[in-house]
Image (cartoon, rainbow, N blue to C red; front, top):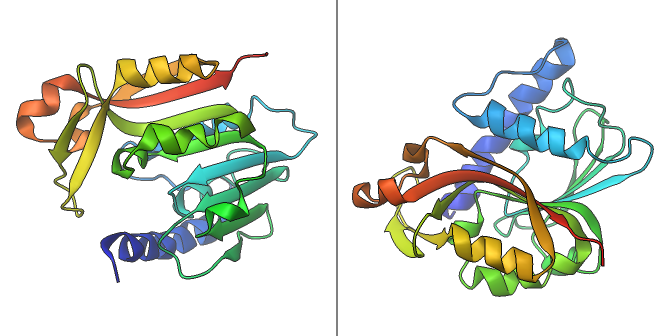
Length: 222
């Protein structure tokens, strides 16, 4: 079992605990660290959409945990969530207390032809080689693009070690380069915030040039 498949399995077990909590209580489970903050921003972004129509979300490179703690926060009846997890063995639908439609898939072909209201990269883009080339494949289909708790460089792109349970490399891409790329593809940034840089877990000599950012982009009308 790879690190990420084991990691996601452990988060699935935690997610089940959150679901049980939310079924028995009127208010949501309190997550550790900055995750309440990040997930609340995500849900506020979702509230931008019309409550009377289906809201289609693609959560790229993620897992069930962010969606297991939303039931007591917003009305979820219109949500349709697709999670792309390349480390699972097969596509499956998840029942979160019959509150909304959630599918986890390991095949990009399952969503390439769909149009989404919101596409999320939740601290995943730094592990994807040639990320801008990959991102360009999906831009046409998403009204909003959201990067959450993502390490970015305030100078040039660099590669850093990571010092969490995952011991590997992460690509800390240039913030300016990302903004320029999105602008070229007719997206404007409408929200940005940062978290403490130490959570980015980069090499110590790179912390001062790293931001741990939440960035929401909106597709401009043609």
